[in-house]
Length: 114
Length: 112
Image (tube, rainbow over all chains, first blue to last red; front, side, top):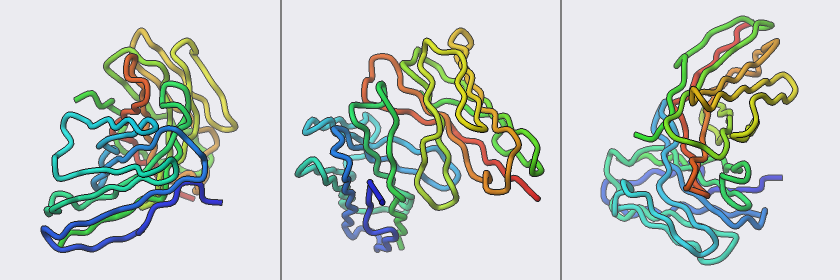
């Protein structure tokens, strides 16, 4: 059974049109992450939540926002997508952070910007 | 960049051969983790090795860690076509409790 579920799997948007990607988890994990992965590159951490505490990476553009309304759900909002934002967006969870254990990933949401 | 480097970037072997991938990182770590990613899919955790461990095994996987050289290796023995995927190392840096930073990855192709 899928434990980290991302929707949609594929999203096509127009330049500048806002997009929201969602992630839900059935693991009751404390930490949720959003990574951006461009073609043939390493996943790059955008931000993460430890419970309700939001942690933004210093180089994450302001165009990217996130919400975590409850333990199970986390959203990635891209306010004005540019061509350079086309990528796979990966959601992951961990019980207590990467220093104590593994991350569990969803299947990803692939974003295309026209 | 705090990203780790992996070597080689791409590796092509025949079924039954062993595959070795190397990973280097830059700072002190809590642990180092290896993940696998099939094309267009999410990442799947393979193995975690803590900073006070030197070697770990899981099935056909063997991971080593040398903290003095800031390097790790992943060995896949008796490879199968189904092992074809990208493999990433990732480190949890000391002082950054929740974060995991990924290396550049090795693309493994196993042919029949």
